[in-house]
Amino acid sequence: MVFACWKRPWRLFAELGAGEKRIVVALGFVLAIMNVCFYLAIDRLPLATVGTIEFLGPIVLAAFGVRTVRNLAALLLACGGVFLLTSVRISGEPIGYTFAFANCALFVLYILLGHRIAANGGRSGVERLAMAMVIASIVVTPIGLKGAAGALLDPKLLLAGAGVGICSSVIPYICDQFAMARLSKATFALMLSLLPATACLVGIVVLRQVPSFSELTAVGAVIAGMALKRSADD
Image (cartoon, rainbow, N blue to C red; front, side, top):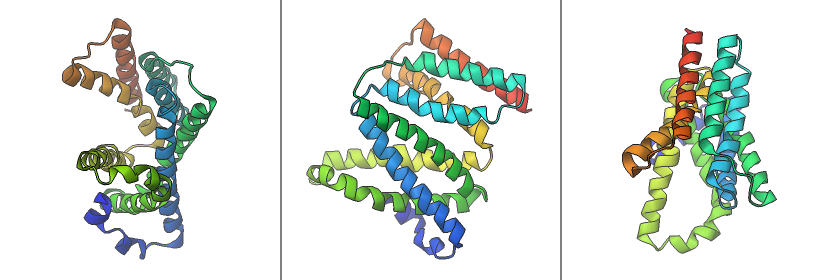
């Protein structure tokens, strides 16, 4: 709804070529199903497990961009930091793992398709994203409407849902578009490894969750990997 009111993407959709329309529609379906799989997975498995499985896709994608020993070392440092920080636990239902690995695969497709629509950069990429988000909303509504019906009369839950939508979809996906327009797929995928480190920092500042020595070591490994990757690119 935010994207639709802000960008009115249907106006641009009519001007796109057939190939561009297919990419936008595909991204819309990927966004819808990816998010559904993620929430179904964390309903059955620990968040750390789902988060780690989700990162397997971008890490493998980043591996395709490895061209030097320094880049390989950077990738190994980032991978090690992610796995140490997220503390994988093997527990839960098999169906949970099915959803988690489906989310992982769809996350890779999101990166690939997101780079396609960001190829022109700037405003056009965000407008194509807006089109995809509207399509995603149409796709996911039949799946989630029945379960959400009880919340439609609760103002607090509606506000919470709007907050989650803005904070988990509108802001980060727009930031992704600007990043994808400037970074290669491999570099962007590797930089996603910074997310656990960022979560750790927010936990310290906002929630007063002081990390353990192993967690600090993991954050340091991720930051060192990113620094090494950057210096190798330069």
